[in-house]
Amino acid sequence: MNWRTKFQVVLLVAALGAATDVAYAGRACEDVVIDPTKTMVAFDTALSLAHTLDQTGQDLVILARQGQNLEKYGVTFSHAAFAVKTEGGWRVYHDLNNCGTARSTLFVQGLADFLADDLISKQVAMVIPAPWLQARLQQVLAAKEEQFRMHETAYSAVAYPFSVEYQNSNGWLLETYARAAAEVVLTNRSDAQQWLQTAGYVPSVIELGLLTRLGARMFKANVSFDDQPSHLRWQGKITASTGDSVLQFVSQGAMTNGTCHHGKFNDAVCLMSPD
Image (tube, rainbow, N blue to C red):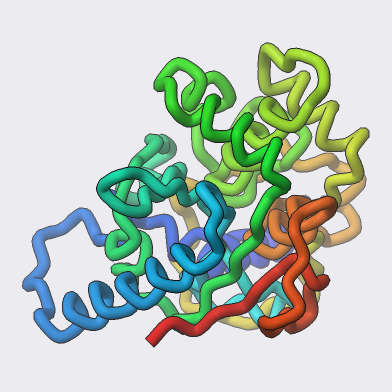
């Protein structure tokens, strides 16, 4: 890979990874003054989203948010998470990058935290898995050992979905989903990735030729692309798990809904703009 292609990859990462430069829930690691208005908006939006989720009558859904504008790369949603209904309200299970480092951690948070980032849009996507799969996913997420079974702390914003060297946030969700959905016991990440391939998971392919200058730093700790297949790199492409590719996959066999907007997705994906 020549220096120009490497630079293009780094620019791509600025788009895919900017939303993951967080300590948790999209908050920057440095001390910042909390904006009361933004906080109130996040809580109001969370209340509205919780009401919408309650109306579904379901106990577990998969959500995706727009942490960064990726439309020029053909991607709408950047980050996906599980949301589980508990006695205390909806709790979000997701993997977050630690302050722009090469590490990540799993977090369990409220809807307000999930929506507290400087999101480019309030629009949230929702997929409702089949009831049997909801139950299986709840079992997996209920135990810390199970939560972390498919987790890799070595983080890359553009981790290749079928390599165990690194993992991005959406990769953890997909591999955990695989453990719950598979008819056989998947004991490790390699098993989960093989199942995903067999089940037809298709990651997002980003054409580097579409990149424009984003004013990115040349190097970021939370970016590694040496796990990407060489034949893709020579074609000027990066393959990664995005919120879009998660939605497209988990919506297969999910519960359909004819009363909501679907956008470019199928009728099992609901696009919501909670106010």
